[in-house]
Image 1 (spheres, rainbow, N blue to C red):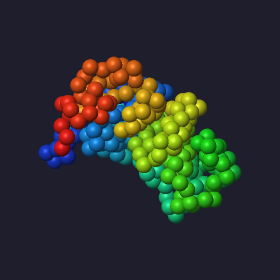
Image 2: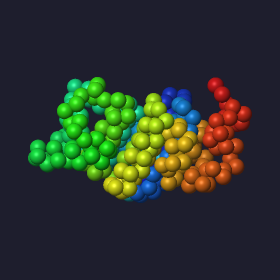
Image 3: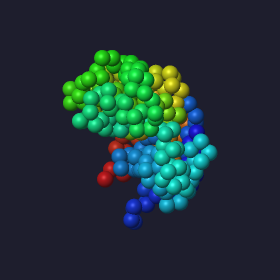
Length: 248
């Protein structure tokens, strides 16, 4: 579904991505892990076309989106849904209006069909009867659920998650993890997750990619990552201060 080939990106003299090669399997959940500030969000922005590489290819369903003009890129983006770190809901809109937003922007659905779709997507994330509430009335976990309902409103082929459990307590973290697993199975989308939560990555990931110093240094199943002998991966997963990862 997604293939990154020799991807490079620098900001001034700072090299962030240095020859990324990664293949993201269709209808699977791939988790990208790595240090804070190590380029994970930059990588995610390349996948959805918010950033263009200095060199390399970003293939989405066989199309190199790095070469597309704005109009064609916008069409490709309709394949995507995205759950941002803080849910990124529109505070001036109700929950129902937030979830309906992509449907009104990108489809010709009638209002009755939009309302039915909104209710269905909210049910899919475990919320009912909240359409008229404002985001300010919701807990952090509920906001994440509404953000996910909006992300899957148009039944995308690919859903991107940027730190979906950040700021949540352990119980809500587990609830969001189960929600990601359940909705991925129900809608069968390709899922890319950025996460620092070690327990979460092993719970939700079909494949895990370790990003370090601008490169994917390890890629495999959760079992393969657990058995890794790469000193960087071992140190990161254990949370140890001793190892090749320098504490800045």
